[in-house]
Length: 426
Image 1 (cartoon, rainbow, N blue to C red):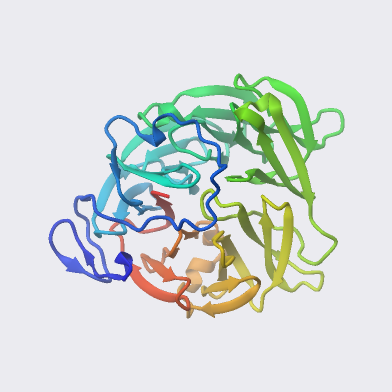
Image 2 (image 1 turned 90 degrees about the horizontal axis):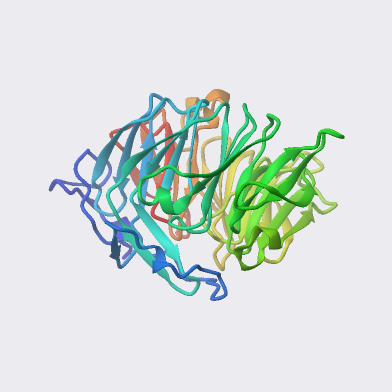
């Protein structure tokens, strides 16, 4: 039996299966990421396998949910023992994202960074799992909405941040983040636009507005932020995601797959995989389980039928699957069964495999959750066995067993209202 299907035993001694109360987190066992499709060729830097001072290596992944309210209150809910820990407050966020360890709360005038205190080191053919004390690291200053792009590993490499209002691209040092410090490898200025800065080897891929023709392109910069001279066209850059098969940036014409040989930005290759001449429209984002090479996003067919685009970063292929329902979110699991989990406009979670719908939950969300001014705060996240979706109006997070007919495994009621949700420990 999966440990997450059991009633939750709270660290403070009470037992409760459907609601959670605040108490101190106690370390406990967790479910490891599924080993399917592991890639022994996955490059690593070999520097301690993700260990940092003060962290404890454990046998299994320490999966937790960070919840953030609209006024900035933050807490961490342990998915194994049910303990919940208050993490104080951050400036009221407009958006919250995660790279699997850190939680980035974007207020529109800076990004507050919270260390979730749990992470997985992907060593290609096996994993290492760590747990440390969660903490508020600090606030990265910037103007306007911030686009965040994490690296493959949380204790090495870097994290990219692009501030739309000022056009500033920032590359943060992950080794410093892992010890609680904000260290900028570089901060360079571009024209203000909706752009991206994403780690690529020892440098980054940064969006740039060409002053000659006004077109947006991606250019490779080195560790100091200096352009290497390599560029590629990319109108409306968004959804920068690091996968096992390279960095994927979604553009209006398709997806750019970027790789850096020997982790050196100057040795980067940039490949455009255009959308095929087929129905599907253009997705606004691509999302998938951390590190996996398959991503998914919602689109619309030539006949305006809704559906899902899937992108395989390793094979450089697109696949289109029509849907019987209007969709608002889609996330690729990246397992051998090719599961995709989606959220429809009625608040139901739907599970698909190879384009075929397998199951759906009843509507889980209130009309208020699906209102246009709230919809952007909804999060659908997946790990190797479960999917999670937040209902701010109900104050609940639903845990769905997507391989078991979309069974609702638990209804979690964190003490801090889940206006925003992020899963850490992956």
